[in-house]
Length: 384
Image 1 (tube, helix red, strand yellow):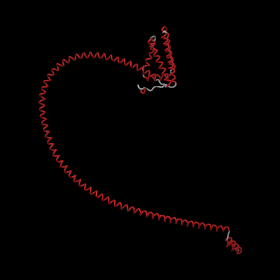
Image 2 (tube, one colour):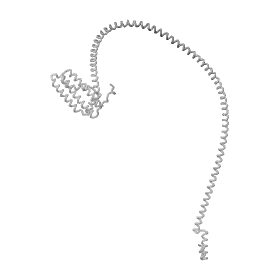
Image 3 (spheres, one colour):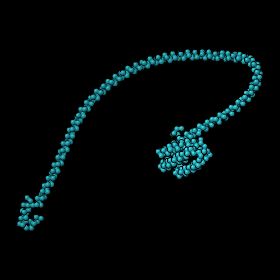
Image 4 (cartoon, helix red, strand yellow):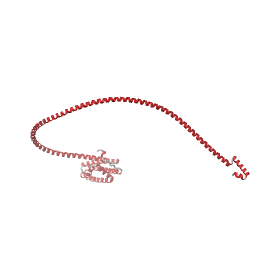
């Protein structure tokens, strides 16, 4: 079986793995003690009853130890693993106590028990190491699978033996039945042979009559077939003559068609030559026109170049004239501004001179005062 097809192995972790390892270690110790006791029992045959009682007490104590150390979660895990393994090997160990009680003093049983206990100790030691390392019980599953395979082989051998015995009994019954049937078949065959002889005679007479009938029937069918095929041959000859006439007509139509097509081809060739000449002439005319257009284009391009240069010159002159006019306008504006500024400055200066009584204005004022003194009231009025 492929390991990938098996169900996913449960893993014990933490306290569960530690509890199971402790239980397994105690179990291994108890089993080793039990194995030593059995060896001592074999060496001391005279005191056989005493070790037996002690062994029973030891089994009871071992069960108590297992129940004390195994935690509830670990028990659930182990029971779940046992259900997943889906085997019957554990069931066989439930009857171990009864077997020990029944035949504990047997030497052969003691030897087998010692070997089984040794195997169980090895398995538990390997299982303890595996649980402590990885937390799985794959070793236990492998051992259980091997035991199940052994049981399956024994069961298959027993089933084969039972089926073989049943087949032998069936074959014996079949031989008897075949013998009886053979005797009945011989008797029936004799009766059948006699009946068949009578039928052969009847068939011979019937065959002679049928032969005469089929001879006459065949002659009639042959004459009918000859007449039928003669009529078919006549129809075929008529069809051949009709097809020959149609073939002659088709040949004549073909010849007329070929002559018409030849005339048409000649006409089309003449038209092709005409159109070729015309196309060549048109091409030459168009080439001449193209040359004329190229020359006119070159002349126009040169004229355009001259006009462009004249335009640039005129544009430069116009721009220079505009710039000169703009400068002249700005100069006029500047002159007007300067004139207005000078007028304002002169007005301000005159006003300042008058207010300060500076220059000739002061002399006139003094003269006016003197004249006022001489003139009396007139001078005052004049001052006003």
